[in-house]
Image 1 (cartoon, rainbow, N blue to C red):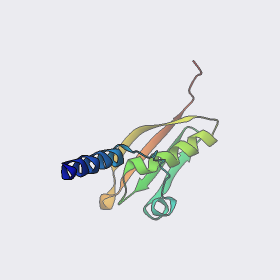
Image 2 (image 1 turned 45 degrees about the horizontal axis):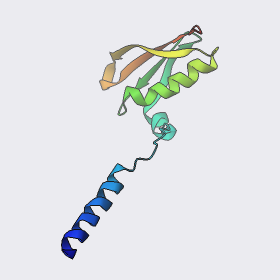
Image 3 (image 1 turned 45 degrees about the vertical axis):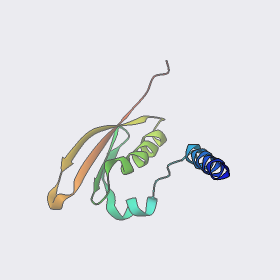
Length: 100
């Protein structure tokens, strides 16, 4: 009977550990982005990055910061195109969001 109780306690302990979740806050790896992406063109209304060896969702927070600093605008992915040497170009438009 005691072995069964110990087994139940062990299973209960494992279940408690598995149900614990930490809040994960994403922060961009600026060094990695700086090594693999650069700005091709920019204006207060859009920004275009050329990147290789990273994903577009890693560049999106940088574009959001850029657009926010240009009149509190929100970055929206407008277009992704292939460029030479398998590099990609992502254009983000900076749109003013009206308060609702």
